[in-house]
Image (cartoon, rainbow, N blue to C red; front, side, top):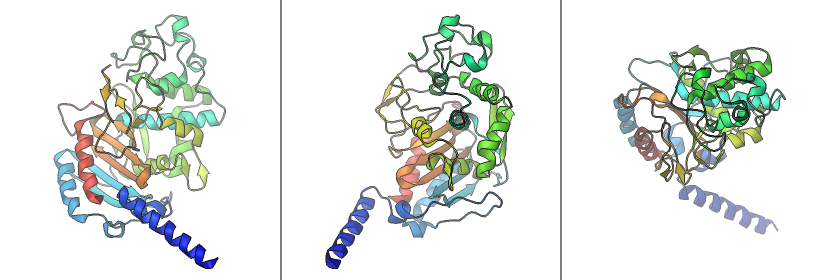
Length: 358
């Protein structure tokens, strides 16, 4: 019996190593415990390239590319531990930067918490919390718009008018029949505030920011409130997202809701969840267009990647198959194309990142 047990154990170990080789994942990446940095200090465990078996000769080409593409900060984490942390152009670990639309994922997560606490349900009409007449549509068309439609960019409202005021919220299609990336999502902050009977920022701070030790705040931008934080705070949220809303022993965001958030939320654009971008799908749409493009969102990135993406290439990439998080903050990689949420930058960057472990 002991001989049989030993044989089975050796076989399982061989299978694990073989599986890791197939997807370039080390046993350490798969089986090392998840690390959560303490909330009360700047201490953060690190992991060396050598311990992961990664290619250190690929680091400098990656850093050169990041510098050329107007990057302010860049991090790679595996199992929550810092593998690479770089700052450029005088930017420091203490400096803050805007998340732009990558902050949509913060709103999505806050909606999930409000639902689990019974303050709302995402299948309710948005008007329950925003009041009748919050759009310029007829009441029967407005009543079609649910919180879920706002989370999935399927409200049917005009996406060409960026300032979210009632006169701009006009009918294009019935809710649920058209995917179009627009700024109307920001009324979700008002949904939370009205459901909570307080401010959105107070609720967000209590339920997410303070629980995971983030630093940052919401500030008025030209069109809507934008979150600003240091780079490590972005990485902290990345760890929360990698763990499907769990931080240490607390399930902060309902796991069922989070799983929905990072999966195709509708058939119109399978590469979009609840304000999260999804890789590895058969096709995708991009902001400002109704064209459907074949193939995955970022071909060079892992197929299981989901991402927070914002203008000027603010990024949190989550790769569950490697227990990896990649964070990028900075100015637009292409100053002539600053607002495009998915760009050639992503694919070129992932070519450089892949070289680290291939």
